[in-house]
Figure 1: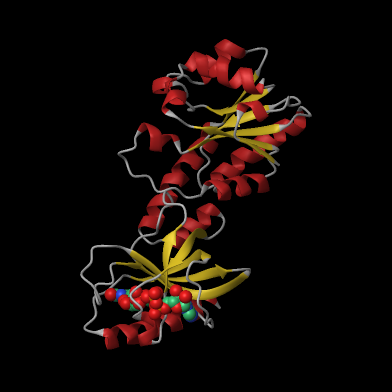
Figure 2: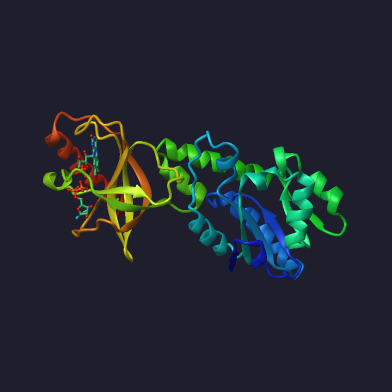
Length: 307
Ligand SMILES: Cc1cc2nc3c(=O)[nH]c(=O)nc-3n(C[C@H](O)[C@H](O)[C@H](O)COP(=O)(O)O)c2cc1C
Ligand SMILES: Nc1ncnc2c1ncn2[C@@H]1O[C@H](COP(=O)(O)OP(=O)(O)O)[C@@H](O)[C@H]1O
């Protein structure tokens, strides 16, 4: 699969079958849509092209509203590739781009650069300044030269609902429900940074994590059974997300992972955490001894969950 970031890199495609969207998470609903696009392209002996945006349009249009994303840009591209899409074009989403009128978007963006044979689009997809363009405008402007294939409402609704649903499930710690909708465990990649060096003194060294991609959603506060990819190996472990009220009054959320059957300095390294199961909420214990006893219980449960 080829990934393009600039218009001048674009080749002439054969019978381009184009779809457009954020596809954050590349979850079950998205996969249904992507398989439709791949099928359409096969049917007309064409190439499938997915147009997506970076950063996420909501980050530009509503920068004041927090939005935790479900996939980092590179990860999203890999997941889309796995669904069999031939090409991805990542539009640098800017204020200027968001100001294109709907008609300019169709003529100067879609047709000029992609010359689509077919556009596969949701019944509720809107584009152009103030979201004034819709599938009706595409039909009026482009049919019959371009085929407009409408994605059935049911498929779109499933997809839209599950993006929000997945975010909400993760924020509540419900990583199992999220994994069902994603068809994989929720993961994030982070750099190991220095903490307070207290973990090793209680027998549970914990790698303190700083997510590489700051816009990614972090699951809700709590204790989780996880897997952690370090280098090319996947370990079992447990993760704490929270304020650590037992040891500090700081109002800063930390993410830390204790990796089972592992003993190495990994400061500065990147690890990918797979969130498998929520174990419990964070508690304020009466001292380190009580905390350590609870963490020992967490380890037993994590090992049982992870098998
Ligand atoms: C599995 C696990 C569960 C934890 N649960 C709690 C908790 O319920 N309350 C709390 O205050 N801290 C909790 N912690 C965080 C510890 O306080 C923290 O790991 C310890 O202070 C070491 O911090 P350091 O890595 O900065 O040295 C937990 C940590 C782990 C790994
Ligand atoms: N089993 C392990 N799980 C997590 N980190 C480990 C483990 N073994 C060694 N380490 C190393 O120890 C560090 C954590 O020790 P800790 O005393 O908690 O220090 P810090 O407060 O800096 O995180 C990790 O960043 C990592 O480099």
